[in-house]
Amino acid sequence: DAKTTQPNSMESNEEEPVHLPCNHSTISGTDYIHWYRQLPSQGPEYVIHGLTSNVNNRMASLAIAEDRKSSTLILHRATLRDAAVYYCILRGAFSSNTGKLIFGQGTTLQVKP
Amino acid sequence: ETGVTQTPRHLVMGMTNKKSLKCEQHLGHNAMYWYKQSAKKPLELMFVYNFKEQTENNSVPSRFSPECPNSSHLFLHLHTLQPEDSALYLCASSPLGGAKNTGELFFGEGSRLTVL
Image (cartoon, rainbow over all chains, first blue to last red; front, side, top):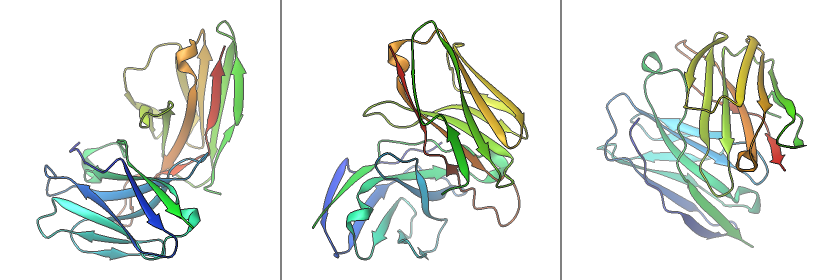
């Protein structure tokens, strides 16, 4: 599986937008970009995923660079409950893997009131 | 509530004990996973089961023994563990295949294991 690189930590103020970057320069054409987050004392939870186009859902937006070598998770208005570790993960097409996800260190997001 | 339930939530055991962790999902998923999360380390994939068959063992020591009797249940049997095995053990499930399959993994809240 191709690797991703994320900053170890970021800080944000409450009610401000947060842009969490992820570099994945060795991404293959069939790799999906997945984002998960892990709140304190909980298991990871799915946030969003995409392939080529930008994606929006109720939790966040995902902006994917045109060359797909980087992406950005956007939280439009950070709340204290968004303080978590955010993981950017590349995942191959379903026909080529068992469904597993390989997690890196992720970015620890602190949200200040 | 993710639909994946892990028991017990906390477990303390001695190095000579035998215990088991249980994971249950009624989401209709056909893939299940065990992950280990040690302090200040990324999640490590341990085992993968697809349709009750083990498809991946990520070089896990034999003192960890998984069992998947059906697609809804996954166990992790523990015996003669070491203190360095103390960690959060997370179970996850996901659907496999299908045009609408996002491949999303659903995680339980984990079982916090302490080995004395």
